[in-house]
Length: 146
Image (tube, rainbow, N blue to C red; front, side, top):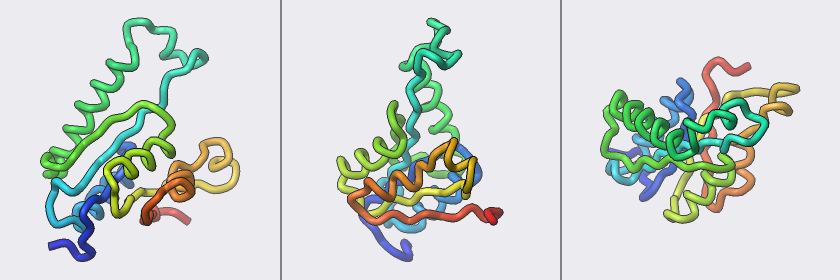
């Protein structure tokens, strides 16, 4: 039984340990696994990225590999009946666009807890999601964050 029932919960993942915790938290908030939407957003390869120079590995192949990895990730957690999506684009914007499209009640996202120069250089998907989301966002702090 969900302790804080929501009709549709979106959980963005990057396959980290923090993502596992976010998916598990999201699963506790829905009445049925079908109400949990797990999304992974691939950043497009640009022309300066070394992977863009390899014509044999295109964006559709990257999406297929990511989808297989996502399915395996969810199967290991015993959550193969959730809605799983792989998109290509800007993670912060695509997550919020997807949540808007499905009329999500909540987004549960993990934070890596970077600050200072690391945060400036890497950006913060969680922060971007908070700024652009149309629904409430629950940010889970990394257990080892200082």
